[in-house]
Image (cartoon, rainbow, N blue to C red; front, side):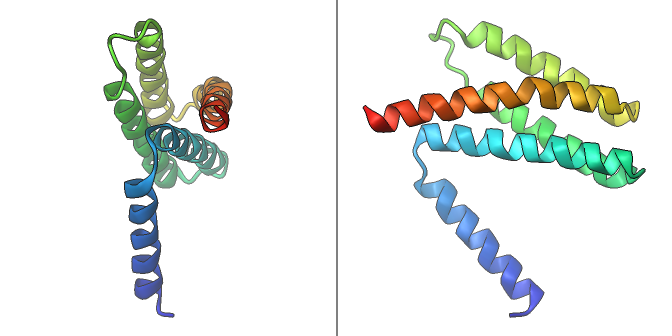
Length: 128
């Protein structure tokens, strides 16, 4: 299969997954990709591949913006989570602009438990 055909097939599969996903699955998918992007950025930074690190960190910022925009103001935890998203965005920018590997590692350390918590919450909803 030519690369362009494979890429197109992968894109179509991803679009199908997103369009058919439940809201809780969409959140977990975003968190999964967020952590992947930050980890890839860290690896790229460590190898001195700053353009790739920048791409991953910028994509991570876009995911954070999407997560922040989806918060329901009627939920008690929305202000705290929005504050954390704001902080993460500032640290992702610092990691990118300042080539700061410690900021990238800090973001990964903050995101990982959030990702796990959202996965646990989503799993609890499917069991109920």
